[in-house]
Length: 226
Ligand code: DC
Figure 1: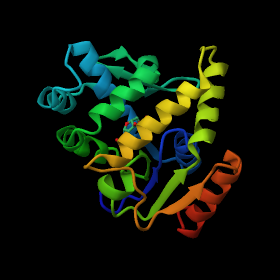
Figure 2: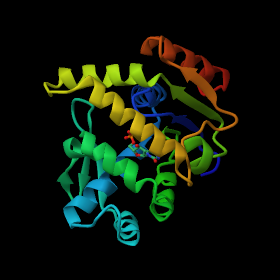
Figure 3: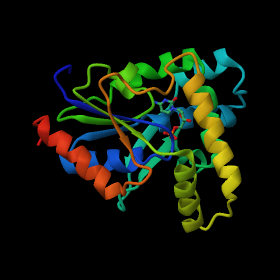
Figure 4: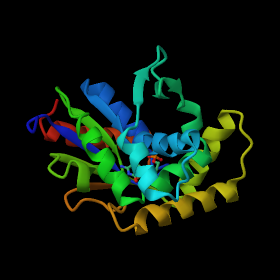
């Protein structure tokens, strides 16, 4: 299993990691790990099971026994189910993000989800999207990206996404949420959001996503993956 290549894509929310990771996995025909979805489902499962996000041992037990499954719909959307029930929408709400970020700061939850994340490493390769993919989960990955963008730009992108979905949103509130989540993700004691020493850092604030993808593909080619 150690010889199966992994590309890690880490960075704060809204930096374009999901888009770039999906594009890389599709182009290479590799598997895809959305590690944030595992933390989001853990937060959601706590709500369903009546477990408080503050009850660390109980949240860790939820994570250890997490009955989660992923399925790709015909339109390419990845659907996420908890105990067979579709939770794809619920986990993508702002509350879902807050829950994920809260439970993700609990060390025993991170330990509980570690093996599950590593199980995604299947032939012919894996693109892993998250916060600590290159630092903790796959520290020996041969190609690591750290994708970032200013908080203002990320709030703008999220705003446009939500407006397109017909949701009513408030830009200053979104920016506040993003800054709060960044602070929590970066300052936690375990697996904080930091680039791996050998990560290629891409700031996408003023760079269109197509150009970021081109740059990433250039590195993929240099590594001989294609
Ligand atoms: O990537 P995302 O927005 O779906 O992640 C949701 C939250 O989960 C994020 O605020 C931090 C946490 N997370 C994490 O701590 N480690 C990861 N590898 C992925 C996500």
